[in-house]
Amino acid sequence: MNPLEPGDVEAFLSEYWQKKPLLIRSGMAPINPPLSADELAGLACEEDVNARLVLEHIDAGDNQTPWSVEYGPFDENRFATLPSSNWSLLVSDVEQHVAEAVDLIDKFRFIPDWRIDDLMISYAPPGGSVGPHTDAYDVFLIQLTGQREWQISTQYDNTLLKNTELSILENFHAEHRWVLNPGDMLYLPPGVAHHGIALEDCMTASVGFRAPAINTIVHDYADYIASKIDDSELYRDPDLKPQTHPAEISAQAIEKVKQILLERLTIESGAVKQWLGEYCSDTRSRTPLEPEQQFISFTDFEHALQSHSLHPASTSRFLFSRDGEAAILFVDGDSHKVPPGFAETLCQRDIDVTRLLQEVDASTSRLLLELYHKGSLVLDE
Image 1 (cartoon, rainbow, N blue to C red):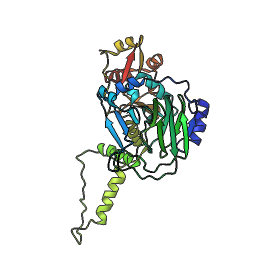
Image 2 (image 1 turned 120 degrees about the vertical axis):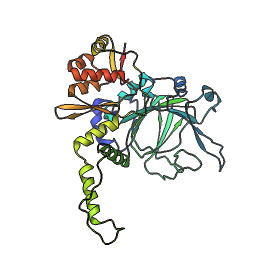
Image 3 (image 1 turned 180 degrees about the horizontal axis):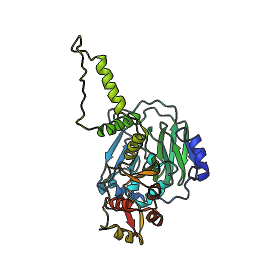
Image 4 (image 1 turned 90 degrees about the horizontal axis):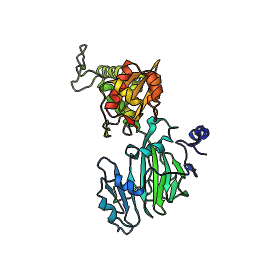
């Protein structure tokens, strides 16, 4: 089975997704890595890139750190001082910085866009690893170059190793072992313990899927609802009655607060839709791209579209949800009421400009220009 093949998607989702691991031999073969090991190291030296080095200290004593981690950006001289084995370089959000990486992550759009998190790429010499651990999210592990052995276990002791800030399992024992070659792929659902060890110089890609904690969902939604309530609205009790003890919180007061919560903490579908779209498209932690040129009018922008391709910026996130006869377009944490055809077209990785212009009206033309000037849309030759 290969979930990248349209005919296998439904079976993969029903049999494996969030249920059990799946090894997919040659699932992406032949594979062309989106960047080289040297380019990955160069990326890790840049200011706006999320990178880390994980080193295993084989000869560490009882009171020494068996594993250590360093965070980028790195000086390029750091790589010249690393040992010949037992370390890993990991760079997250590669799709934001390398255009070719977007093509790789696009292959996994059989999972809804709002669930896709990022593409991480790692490089390791022989013995390189980040230790046995678990993740709280679904992940596809794709071998780009070289060989890596993956060990997994679904039944394990979750005691963590001491003397390290990394969450490494202390007593990991593998139930299954596989050596992955370039183009091989391993899917792991949340909570499966895994340990990947480089057998030679190798690069591995990891496509991760966001899985927000339930308490985060409840907390963020409650904050969203609270933000819609006017600060001038106060608790009122004009019907207050005398009570026996001044320190008692009366049943009447409890019932009044309960009613406020029931009335205001709505879980109506429209409110949940609005919050979820804005929450999942939020990119405030990312640095927006600067547009290469400014357009005074939509007519000028439309003229440029005749000779350029248009696509969402690598740092932006476009989502939509149907809303009756219309749609709500969510871009980078903001929402816009638009025609459904416009939303569908704009949320494609390679936007069909001809179709898009057929959907444009006065309102959406202003929105397109706004999204371009904000850096959410990019024009390419």
